[in-house]
Length: 196
Image (cartoon, rainbow, N blue to C red; front, side, top):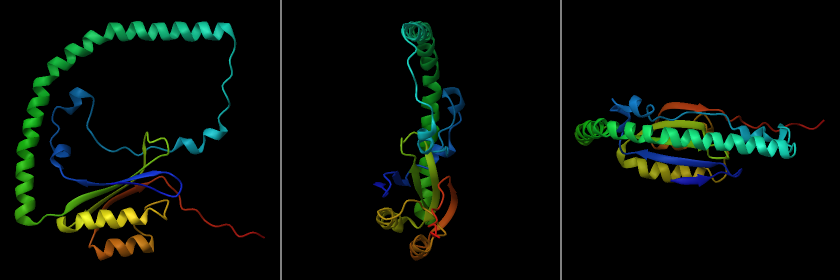
């Protein structure tokens, strides 16, 4: 579920249906690393302070053209290596998918019989949508996950950050019996200045 706040930042409220994909990743380092969230700063706030680029004339254009040509040649030389590496990794990726499937069946059975909580992630992207600036991981009873996501979506229509300590947010989380497992944000509360 996606929603925009009053400043135009995109927020996602995600119900995690497949936690076993996080738990079972034995061969992920071979394919470039583990899949996980990473909080990064919103550099669009500081883009106004950066100096403007200027053109140095024909010498600059030739240098940029040569640099582009070198990058193209390097990409052409590395392409067959990446194709062979990908073909070598296919059996490992299939084995990883099989392990994830087995772990998923076990996890679903445990959830069904033990009535385990479901995970709901509240992720706030920076304005360029190239990195997270806020992440909150919530645990809630599985029957209440969908109504909670709908309620949180309504909260973002008049709010620019998600803070479990905020009274309105805390009231919603308490009403649904939510446990906040993790909360990390780079967004700051705005304080209203008093004019003298």
